Length: 115
Picture 1 (tube, rainbow, N blue to C red):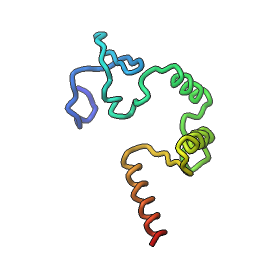
Picture 2 (picture 1 turned 180 degrees about the horizontal axis):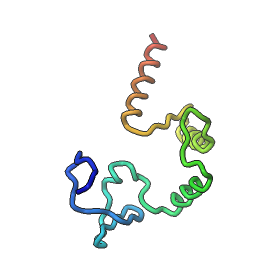
Picture 3 (picture 1 turned 60 degrees about the vertical axis):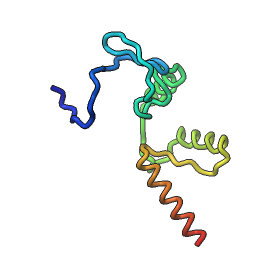
């Protein structure tokens, strides 16, 4: 028996490989991933540019640092997003909960500034 807490009604399939939008189970059956890992793998699986970028990041010795510090790659990504969207700032977060909390705080800040 698995030690993973039973918080989901898991289906009896285990994926062992992914490529693009496709997943393969232990028996080799191919599936279209219409869930994107429930929005975690929205970039798909094993895309060569993503693999290269992740490998470069891992090889640098720094996979992740806290937002309490300057992160050059994050700043470059924010610059590019701002350029594309025309917005002044970009907020990076880890979850929908954080995104909603930030949206509420920004709305309150805007409202207070406008009276």
